Image (tube, rainbow, N blue to C red):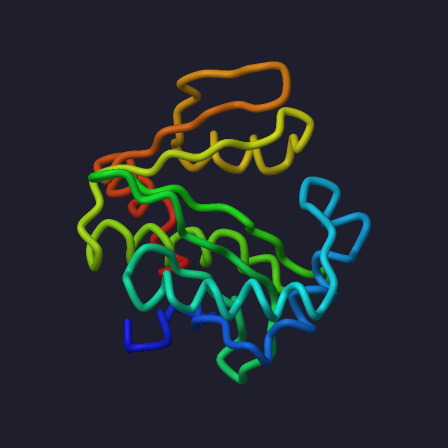
Length: 173
């Protein structure tokens, strides 16, 4: 990772900036894509980004725009809730019409950065049970359901799990 970018095979992840507020609001305002996210407006998103940038500077959170090599924005993904050797990732949304590889490549980039740059040992995250496509994605990737409640599945995914997944998804690296 350079200071502001994680480079994938056909996409990059770059840290969000204030100027990304409008893109974030447009993605989160898409009723089909954002049914599992809270609604926001541009002014509140700009305030949130300003506050977030302090957490980013302290290395406590990272929020990325997923974009093409030609800088076309495709989506968003965030790392947060750092607990010892574990991190959470989410706020993952990819716009309609983005290349199919965005999901797998952005997940690979997040895990590569988290495990090999930041030296986390595992990931923890939750997914709404009715978000079946994302639940299936994480299970195919090798994440393990470690708990559930009425609304969510709770997953863990270790660095060793990622090493196995990298073998299966090598063509995306």
